[in-house]
Image (cartoon, rainbow, N blue to C red):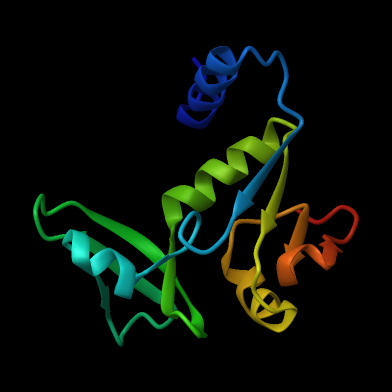
Length: 140
């Protein structure tokens, strides 16, 4: 039985008429990482627990649903989070041989601080495309 990530990827490919996905390029801010200042207006709040530094729980105040997340370093947009589920699904894509690239207009220094907390990537694009950084060979 295919994993949830594989099922999602197959569904997207079928709808788009694509037979094989070789790479996924994803925006970072507002796509992979979310910021409390943006999600709060939709009833989704970030709750930090001092006993677990670097982690947060994101809670939907309407439904009560919660997700464990990694807390990203403060940026000009404030604290951000990336969910553990996102990290897991990106890992499934990469295990299936799909390259994963994050793309951001953020400064390279900001991306470098965030990379250890993001899903593992094959490359990262920063500064509105003017910098491309590749993961070291063999890094998972």
